[in-house]
Length: 132
Image (cartoon, rainbow, N blue to C red; front, side):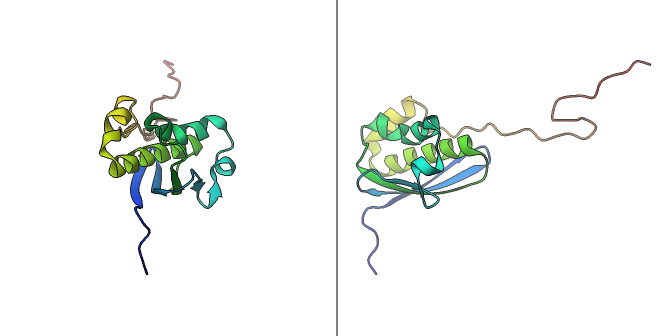
């Protein structure tokens, strides 16, 4: 069985979302969890976040993208996909690294939800103090 020609793989993460991205030459179709991009992310801002790496590198419409994403919410998933696509583009063509680095698409955002502490209602919020 022949391997898929020139497929690039990359992983993107954001908060608790993990996206596995498969990039192959094509017509610009983006499929997320077996659904078209417009169906999975109905909000235009999230669609723009997913496509942003292609816009920066002027490669819109040149690649088909297959994505498996899990965990987190929709915005975290969209940004995890963006990181995965940016990494796959760099794997394919090292010349894209400077442009993607400049706009911050190759940096893994390390911010995570802080854990809740015992004796408190939330991570940092405290119960109301009563002097008497």
